[in-house]
Length: 207
Length: 207
Image 1 (cartoon, chains in turn cyan, brown):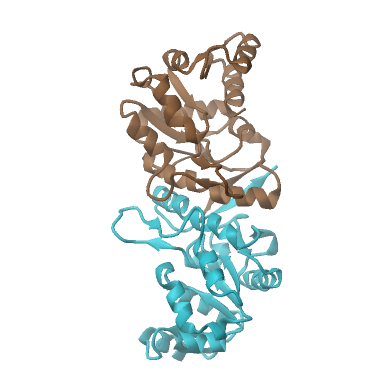
Image 2: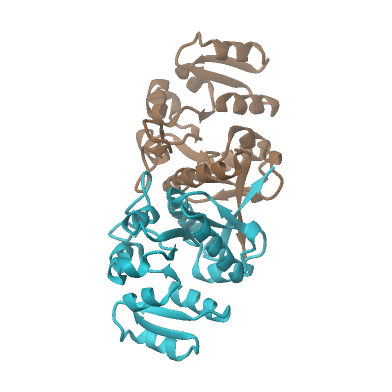
């Protein structure tokens, strides 16, 4: 669902998009590709070969395995936008994170793929808002974190195409800042519980 | 420092305040009490006996021990405002939390003092902003979490005296929501690193 929202928006912005799945015969991906002139579908490996920029929109608990199956060599030298959250759904009523506090999924991915420029972003909001910030009025923001300044600049431009003007893109520094945006999920969940709606975002107020 | 900021503000609002310390001869507390007509000082036990509402403004890693020394019986039936954060300063460059993810310090305190109504609040900002939200313009917010509705109402009124109008007090539900506001420290630290100023706060934007 998150992947489709991003893929649709990227097509709208004039990009070519290949939707990657575990297998090349994924029905949803084939259907999506058939409906979009600039869209195609394939395996995770196909999509990673195809893309100049890769988006990891998989569930956090399979992200490392999926990226491994996509092929280290296919990801090397590329920008990887990581929008996943390390949600552990096992058991607890209130979900917890399987990595937090002294590490993050963003860092795990960056360590596993040292030749890829990982940029953590968009993981602090729901999919609709990611690709259309105007759904919620006001000067709310999106965070980016990553070790490579050029990659962050590429991602900032892409976010700009989505509607995130550069003044609303908050650069939190290197990839360790993913600890901040991932841990925020705990607060997001509670605000969601209070508002009973996922259509919200936070903004930063300064003096 | 945080305790003094809150105590000063409470005095300004017309309350009587006893500043508690480990020992009755704490120099800073004695000095503070001497400078304020409605102010006094004493041990943690004295302060807990004195207060109708107790504020835990101690460092997170000593909070449980301090509250234990304050005396379970002195806290029973009272509102305890917990503004602490479970920061573990040992070693790491970037501080981590000693409880997070599936538990929180707010919950630990509530479990340890079941006859006290713990309300977690104000732990998402610096001390100056806690007692003067107008230092930062705009509709930024303060969170409250706790199991007792009457206690949260008492705290909401007190926050109102500090300048937090009720529309800016976001009730996140029961004390387990302290997981959210405490984990947010990780994001707060990164935003602080980017802004190079602690004079900021977040607000919630909705559609």
